[in-house]
Length: 308
Image 1 (cartoon, helix red, strand yellow):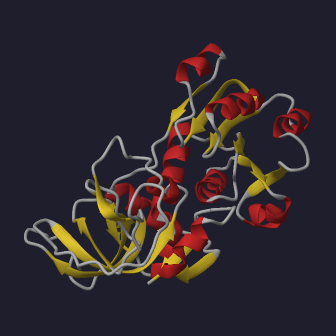
Image 2 (cartoon, rainbow, N blue to C red):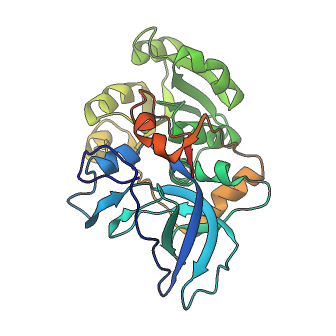
């Protein structure tokens, strides 16, 4: 699937099979995970930061089998099941394709036994981001943690890891997601449709929450939502919405967390799935050619997987 320009509609196209150059692997993809960042990438999120090739093959996350290896590659072998992220200069050679290449020293890891290839494809970006959020906050048992957009891709994994750390999680979600949020580790669920979240939280937790994780809010919305965080508490964004100095002026801590990671961190996230600390829910599995329809869904939770 390719786009011809920033903001374009993805369309099927025959493209040459890439070669595994020195230090790289050719990967036959079985599935590509859809993240909240894929639409942004198509719309030009990195247009001013990284060079792009057009027609651009988007797709950040993917999983499949190593089909060929270039010279100097010793850490992987043909036939290995692997998962990883496929976003590197030049942008435009992503995972929404039958084949792609990746550097052997990139964010790529073998898929452990017990994790399916389709399941693995839904994990990398969101799982890495969730792990970074929880690590940054240094959660301790008993803390109250508020997760905005908890039913989304990053929120789903963050909630599970926070609960595993012993935190009491407040999930902001739609009412139809309540049961699933509780099953995945939430202590409470706040229905953002019923009434303003800040008003509900002030009624339920007048002393405030300890940590706010927010993967969606604009800076203005995040400032408003952070009013429910107690003095000395922490606020984290994965979309660059945190103003660190403004937080300090209000007696709060926190920062912006990049949705990235390396191979060691990815292996750690995979092992957390193996250990049962996280499950990887896949809500939608559709053929690759249905990418335009999946991107247009109102709730792009990122737990959609496109199969080749």
